[in-house]
Length: 421
Ligand code: LLP
Image 1 (cartoon, rainbow, N blue to C red):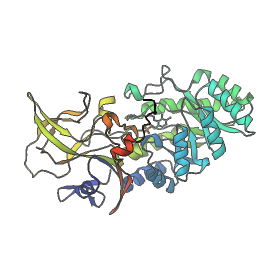
Image 2 (image 1 turned 90 degrees about the vertical axis):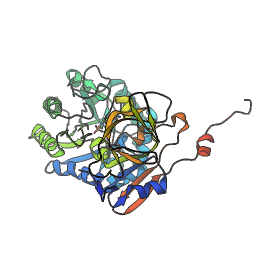
Image 3 (image 1 turned 45 degrees about the horizontal axis):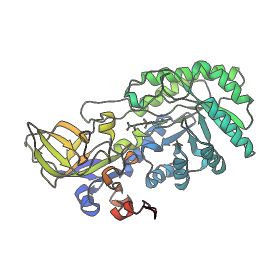
Image 4 (image 1 turned 30 degrees about the vertical axis):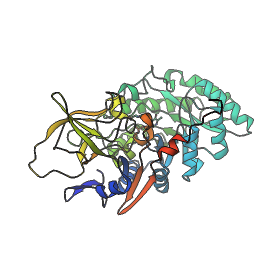
């Protein structure tokens, strides 16, 4: 459920009609709903009620400071994957003890910054990384809390580009080698083992792969405890999928996911951490765009819109589906017809949808792409010297631009022409 509903035939973000925002900020733009962000975070909290837990929002999904502050204010922790994300989390006021640091390529500078600013744990992904962290922490006279990310070799049954839990993926250490790696972790100075980490992929639409992975982690918890390690936290990653089509998709709900987690960790007396990103932000955001031209092609009609692949790359990168709707609904009874919805970028890959049935649209009409709150703005680029599009946050009838559109001059003036050119 989200808070983007039609009222009187006009799509609203909470209490605000989208045409009003479009008139103010211009198109294209991203718009987020505070009520939906809050609701989705709360669903996870409720689902894990009864087990000690920390919901660490995977901020790679949407890391705007206003979004982070909204979630941090509710008590969320953050899952960060770079020095930049760490700095963003801190800037949003998230205390170090609520930040977990993931990623296969943490640099020594990242490690130092996090140890200085405070960190709940590093999720270590390899032995070389573990040795580097040991050196950095020791040189700073401190101790780094760690989990080791294990790779359970489970098929997440999702898009190959976002599956992470198979042995062929670059992530984690194989479960079969975990004892060895934990033994080395215990020997190395400057490290304190606090738990185990796992994450098998994103946009999972079934619970079974989670269950397979979590049962392996539960078993490993027992084995590692018997080896003398103090496994007190399990970071179970993110990945719960969302419905991208309103009509025919029903991925498992956070309640079912929470119940599964509780079953898998029953009797272990551990603190659970989860790292959801997409489920919190995805359906809390829309991309609003205008039709520039209706172009009648050979046997197909193109709606050329002012958003492009640089603004929302998911369709061209993953073949992802996003629901698309007119902001102003057509009169009842108007027939739908197929359109190809494309952007202005000079690549055929700049296609958002092919042969999508929509009520007739004309130049100047507004369209909304749904489920664009996660992995939308954060993956945008300035390809074709198209400015990053604004982000807007709504709460009830409050509207705020939370990232303005840069001017062409601002973009151009970032370049430096050496005097010898
Ligand atoms: N934890 C780790 C270690 C991750 O790698 C990820 C996502 C998450 C948590 C959050 O997963 P989520 O709950 O959002 O599924 N750009 C792609 C998605 C990439 C996901 C990468 N890792 C897309 O647009 O579909």
